[in-house]
Amino acid sequence: MTSLDLTFAALADPTRRAILTRLTQGSETVTRLAEPFSISLPAVSKHLRVLERAGLIERERQGRTQRCRLVAVPLYDAAQWIGSYARFWELHFAELAKALAQDPAAHRD
Image (cartoon, rainbow, N blue to C red):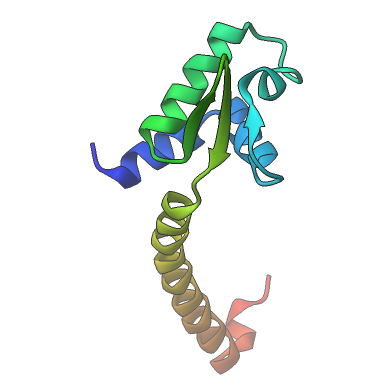
C-alpha cells in the first residue's frame, strides 16, 4: 500500500478526521483526544494507530502520558493529488462553457 493509499484510508473515517481537526490546534494527550467521542479509549487508540501508520500523526510518550501531534505532509501530498483532478475538471468545464457560448440556442430546454 502506498503512502497516498494509507492517507486516504485513514481519512475515510469521520472519527479520524475529527481527531486530525482537533490536532490542528496543537498537540494533545490521547485521553483529551478521546473525550468528545462516545467510544472506548482502546477504540480511540486503534484510530490513532491507523493515523500513525499513515504518517498523519506522531506520538510521544511523556511519562505515563502519550501526546499526539499532527504531521501535515501526507495531507499536502493528498491535496496535490486531488489538485491534479481539479485542473482536469476546470479544463473540461471551460470546454463546456466554450461550447455553450458558441451555440446557446441549441442548449435551451
